[in-house]
Image (cartoon, rainbow, N blue to C red; front, side, top):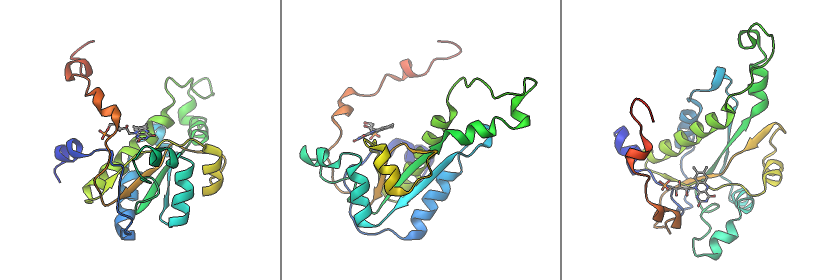
Length: 196
Ligand SMILES: Cc1cc2nc3c(=O)[nH]c(=O)nc-3n(C[C@H](O)[C@H](O)[C@H](O)COP(=O)(O)O)c2cc1C
């Protein structure tokens, strides 16, 4: 699919077939998700990919799936082919920025103008969603409500933080988010030429 079409047609989907997707397809999505820029090439991003139905249900519980089901949206976080869970370690960035090429004359870590680890895991997430779409699949995004339980469930090393759950699968008709009623910010408000 052409890039502009891919970007314009992607949407957050909240209903999927549970039929499995080939491991090779899932792996291609994951490999593309790895190839994003990161501050200092720190590469603090990781993905956990869950396909097992029982595990998918337990992962979905940490995102409050029953609340979605209760408002007619169905079990869209567990009923999918795979869940991609983007995780990030701020500690990897801190360690990287204590290396000599990053500490400068003062010999100490920078004052972070922006916590770039959140920026970089966002890029990973976006590429995963676009890559799923490009593979003829669809993807959603659910925020995690119980981070400690999800970390324990996935066996994450303590320094890693799971930022959300991206269910991926073949698209079914779904209930659109009521948030979409807000409409897009006008392009003129979004993009400012030369200065604000
Ligand atoms: C950081 C982030 C968190 C989100 N969390 C949720 C969520 O918890 N549940 C949900 O249904 N959608 C969630 N969404 C999806 C947004 O509602 C959705 O992206 C937005 O409504 C625009 O729709 P679109 O992606 O189809 O263009 C989240 C999106 C982002 C980027």
